[in-house]
Length: 316
Length: 237
Image 1 (cartoon, chains in turn cyan, red):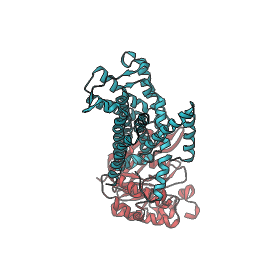
Image 2 (spheres, chains in turn blue, purple):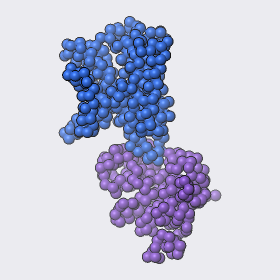
Image 3 (spheres, chains in turn purple, green):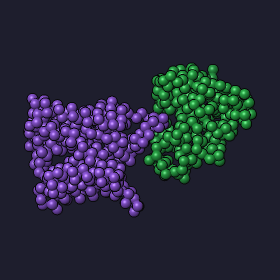
Image 4 (cartoon, one colour):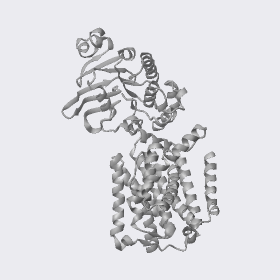
């Protein structure tokens, strides 16, 4: 009950934010930050439950975005079905890839995620007849999506609320999953895969399921990105986006399910502030990452959770 | 016809040119507690690994459980068939509470005896604590508890008392003996502490250089000159 109340309050509080911020620029920034927060949540969840680092979640993000843009533009299927396929296709792909790649684990797994995502990037770049190469695709989205006017998805004020609600629902769902027997099993496998086998569990399927779920979250972020921007380029598949999501997850911390989302918010605020100071803002981001990794190895959320624990408050 | 609880026939395991286990055959009678002793490098843990499926397909020979051939089964399926094990190095889930990990094992075994095992292994007071936060001796008991969940038919214990004080070792040994008798579990135990071995085992098998050197009741085995020379030392006679 407490969990439901916390998430309801978080959802309502976020929905009120656009009324507080009049600046369209700030709302645009916050909407982008929340979409990135969803992507980072997927990346961080993989680290938390599987103990694995993905350098390729942009692949799933971009795949979701491209499926929306291509399907809407070429009228492959109704928009409702498009949205479902845009999330399901990367999920199924991740499940299949995971079943093969997770046997390797560690650095080999991370490199393979990078290779797969880069393969999709190259495909989008070079298959001009389908994806229009570097020029990208301006998605011909319908006037109404899921019963809502398209403007709801393309104006920062309303899209922020949509994305915020999606983020809160994702975090709620993950917190329920973490507290479930399946969450305990996947944590146990992360900690000691061999012992999990010796108490009677298969380990590949649960790990692949976590990988697929994290890919689904990334694809969901990609779908929101495509609806909001109405335009996709191969950059949404590029490894740089995967790297940014990973930085967000590290800065926010992955022990708490909400850590990567907090990291995304901090990342955007820092990027915005640093961008005002210098053109070399990535150096400031890099420096911050080093400082956080050394001084706050559990990230911002880990530090907050530790402080809350000392005060006797439990966190998800 | 009564089948052995656990039987290994012609078990061989090589590491490159080194033969760690050389065509070893062993059969455990249902309900017995068998001690497996031998000097370091004799092949005791390797034998446990081969019997439990830890070595995969890299070993040769046949393993059967109550007459059913389990040679081709991976470790998790052997566990589900009733063959459980603990490990020489504590092998638990440090970040999970004691209750959570024993509950997890209970779900895999499709039984509901987590509370019974926690109680039997005297872990009730620690149930809510993270395994990483409890003492080494308690971690060893958690390791054994994970193997005991679901009342396995055969239990392989690889140095369960390693690193424990003499009092803790004997306490654990007596606990295991009582549980094995109560739950009718067949046990194969590797242990260097001879006090533990002689206090609970009804039969001993001695491994030396990957082969069985001797096998029989403890009193007979400890008197065998070749066992004394290879392992026990003259003071044991």
